Image (tube, rainbow, N blue to C red; front, side, top):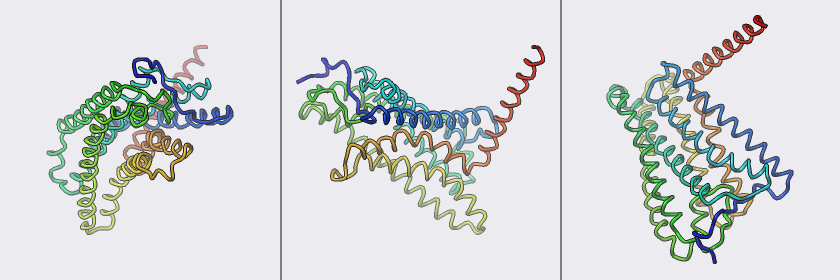
Length: 321
């Protein structure tokens, strides 16, 4: 029997059993990681630099990109390191940090998605009050509240989880540290307090989910009342990216944690964990940019300016040499 005071490291689930598959997973994760860095970095830079994108929708999108960047940087680099060096270990403090930041960033992302749903609701159902309800100060307060609630929630769960006595070894059935896997290592009945916190958090998440559903019911009703087909198409276009991101976020996370035990297997569990923790941060920027002409134009102009500056610099250097 071991306890948390004697555990100095945890053993993570390896991504593959053979060296060739480990290296394949390394390159796959590297590609997804670079795509996430590029996509989210471009959105953050475009929104920050282009004053035409200083709107509530793009402000919340910038915050969403920050959470996506943070969440993929929390899990993927360690997984790539373990695949490269053929190891599965993570330190006790490293595991605690991973749990905190992942819980913090994913929680904040869900709250931001709820706020972005409110933004679409006001824009379509109450357009005359949009400037009043979603002014710059109101947007800043809502974004700050999402980050603060995510931070406090993560701090509470992380501190409580890592204060539990661990009596079931140190092997986690996941390629990154997460609370459900650590609770499986806790002593009998010692996890009930944290389970209570999880249930309370689940009710809060369910409340946000019901708010999103209710808002979209009102949005669809308002859109269907628009007389022109072009107006309906434009209204739907502003909602589709958010709806796609929310659907991807919720469906993958719910299925990964609430799937029936009879269909569970190590390979399926690993694939689902990658699907909900690694894929969304890379896909979200492309989902949002596909139907957002203003954002695509801003990114195009920014990249054109960068290429022009690089060419100018190279030309100047060539002349001096």
